[in-house]
Length: 619
Image 1 (spheres, one colour):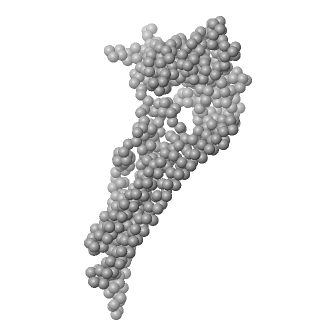
Image 2: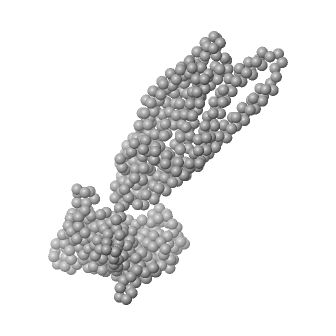
Image 3: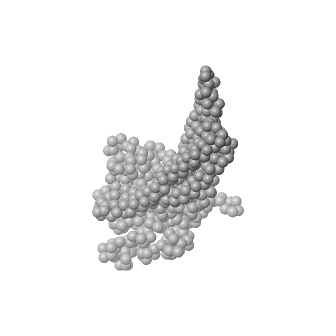
């Protein structure tokens, strides 16, 4: 995540989300809150009026007439009803505003996440990112629907009550303000400590969510290596940290309200005593004292509510900082201008076509206004490429290679030698620091990333399937593909046979990354997806390393069909699968130490020979 911004900047930014689409609704809310607060003050003033002008005279009257008293009470009932309606109105509208705002934030988060580079996801626990969508966004709901309206209502109520108190008696008002000063100091101390631990609580929740997500994904590994106790110990440490921050945050938060209320009660007693003394000297009436005591409650209670809600606001602001940090992450830069277009031959030249022709070309605009077209063939060249995931730590050194159209190029070497890194560079998941990579003799940094990746197909060791039908998962390779094209791709990849045996065939629903399907079946679907895309360049990253030998034959047959007529880059642990490669690169610590076809490398009796004969272990 990026460096945190100031609380004020976060509040301003958050207010833009709330106010941008709900200006009229917020005006209604503000007016409703004012009405609700004024009704509360009128109700207190009514007590003074009721006692001094009605109850006291009626107590001494010989023939009391309650008609006027009844009429006044009915009138106040209507006033209170207006207050109830106003309170209901602003609470109901704030729920709508909150849900609309959260919907917008989630959408913006997800839309922005799609634009982030692979580097971002490779360097962060996925569970921690998920925590932003769930826990951090949910804290905003509490703040928008409850905390902000309550704080605003409390402030308006306190202002109106304070004016009424000064109008009633200035001396009693000064006593109340003295108690308020004490409340503010107590609130600042307890609230400050509480907010500090609420912020840490948000961070600890993100960490524990990230760890749980890792353990769920790696549950088989945990059990195979008997890592249960160690994983529980690690979880206990994270859980203990969360428990501690949560306990401290809530300890301060929970004693804040009682402290404020008891200080308010002390002020209430002082006002009652002093008010009684003033009443004895006929400075205040009984009605004024009764009303003022209610003013004390009406003034100190909102102050306690504000102190209590500040904890939720601070927690929500901490969540907002994490939300905005994700939204502010730099998106994947794409400064390419060469695009992939449908093409056709016309008078011996390649020209752009508005219809699908089965032929693709690179559309290359030049500074002088010319536009040239280069047919998509799948030639890939590396020229003195150097790369490191960190600027000062190189992974690849002086990588130079040329894959001609239709060639099969394979990479072998120990884990960490740089095989997968090379394929990541072809896709421009990462950009190189030095050297050049050319695709059909065009520098790939000039090609728009979407168009570049559209021309490439990938079959990875770890397949990624999504909730939906078999048909939907294959269609990821080409979103507008017809059912016939999907079936044809499945037949090409040898997946059709097992798909037809499923309960609903191509319409069978799968969940949980293909639960219920074998690793080989999932891999066949991945191959079918790539076949549907029909790319000129194919990358196979250890696609058969995690399946058994029998299944491998079926998968390999599907891949062999897919590889025909394409430029193919293969990363394989099983050297038997790359014997027929046109070019084999042996990598060691990011350098190509041997290159040639199988026979040439065997004749050299170097590293490849040792790997192939078993004299050297591949890892």
